[in-house]
Amino acid sequence: MYPEYFGILQNTNSVGIEVVGNYKNGEWDSLTNEQIDATTLLVQQIKNHYNVHCENIYAHEKVQRKTAGEGQTVLKALNID
Image: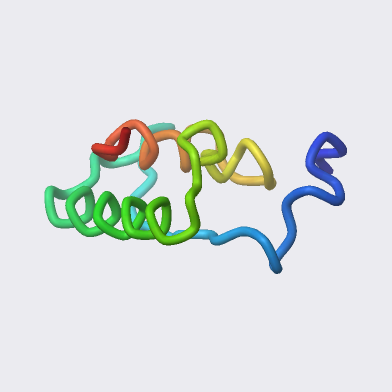
């Protein structure tokens, strides 16, 4: 599907985080403050523990088939550096 990631991103070296939201009329609902806070904390802990750099954090639709904007909505909402 995404040949640029074949052999690079696998279940053994990546983590997927699911954030549930509603999709209506071609748009994703904004994340709640609780979703933003919890997901930001989780991503920061993973980054620190595994020494992950921001350039190695991808929106889901960047590496796998998903509705356009689904993962990007989450990624944009996070307070990560």
